[in-house]
Image 1 (cartoon, rainbow, N blue to C red):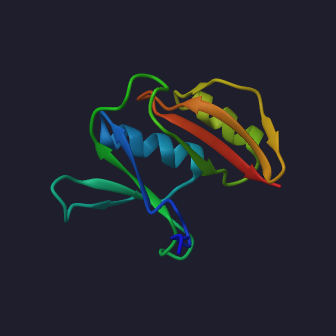
Image 2 (image 1 turned 45 degrees about the vertical axis):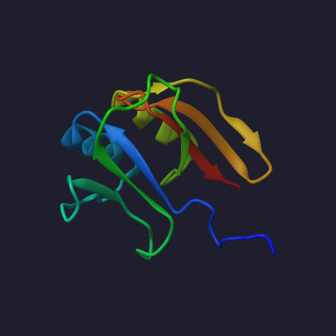
Image 3 (image 1 turned 90 degrees about the horizontal axis):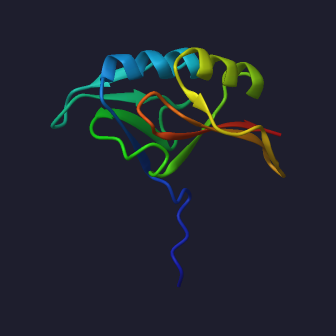
Length: 124
């Protein structure tokens, strides 16, 4: 039998060079309330889910891949795509594409200030 998990992605880690600055960037762009968890080997900032049980991600002090060479994480926008893209740019991110439309919504590719590849996704 083939394994078919509820969610293939269990957890995502976003390496950042300055945790407080990265927390401010993601708070500004996505309106997240980030919390620090220091129970592991280094502190992490948790990106929240609505019910606290969904597939999530965290920021951690680490070495990001060269600009745009790592995996792309698509994050849901808190309002609409265009205002999120504007906040992304104003907060220090680099926008790489115009909106791309797919059957389930639209997204824009960008690089966060550490060079992590981020997709800003708006569901249809």
